Image 1 (cartoon, rainbow, N blue to C red):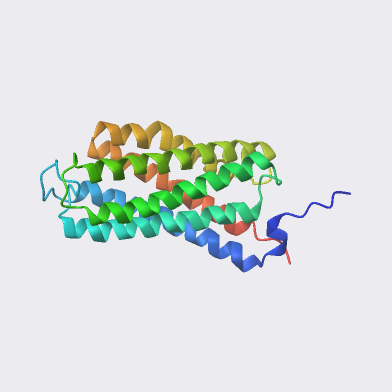
Image 2 (image 1 turned 30 degrees about the vertical axis):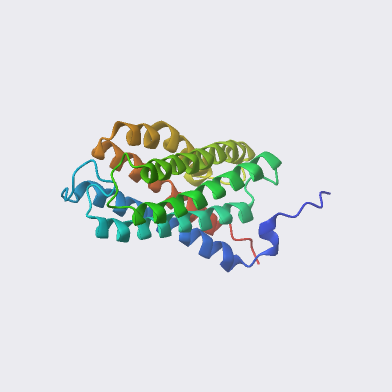
Length: 212
């Protein structure tokens, strides 16, 4: 008989419930902020980093986005603890890449909020933009690596089983092209879809609480 014990076996059921809830909340916040970004009437030139927001409004939005990414990161820690990948090393590496990527995105949001008045072409803005790209790449790569293993392991059932993989694919296939295109509606839809993957993922994490 196997002696392998998943990380979730040593944790309180309430822990995974809280981590799953954090993931759900991040998805809802992400959708609301994506809608706000396209609904807000442009208040500054397109060449300004904070567009369409005034610099002060962007600072508030950026803090909220940083909180959103941090909550998603907490949700991915829940995936790590729930162990729907049966301890496979590739998935563990992938999840940590995704977590580091979310950490980078969290810091980038705060940095971006601090440079709202800068032009898009300024060295600082270019650096922050590049850092966003690195964080997104790490998260997408990690989600795809871990997501494939989670799907194949078959521990989770239902739509949540696919959401780690889906979040990585949406980031690569929709969010990145939307950011490059500069189209605000395309960007809003892509970010909303990315955020939406975290809602069923969070619910699945919560349901992964081991029986007492």
